[in-house]
Image (cartoon, rainbow, N blue to C red; front, top):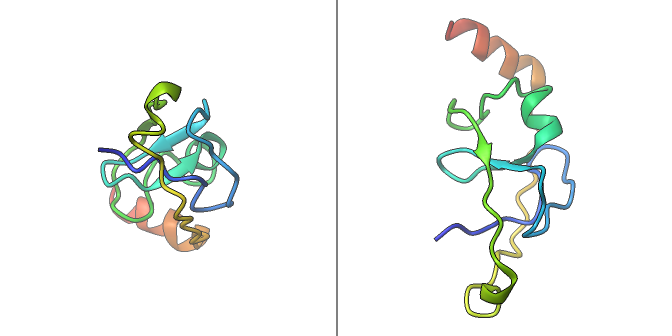
Length: 89
């Protein structure tokens, strides 16, 4: 089951369970759409994979299946990330 993490790992923007602009990679690294499609160039800085829209957990399931409160905040070294993308092409 997805954790549904509460924030963007890069800019720390709040991304509640029903955020329309939350995206995740295959390992559930979580970013806001602005960071993912902008400075991250749709490449996860942790695994190198792409992003998909994070599903919204239905409100009626939140009590039984609560979302994560664990915040992961690791601002990306953009220069190194862009270099890594360029080297992989």
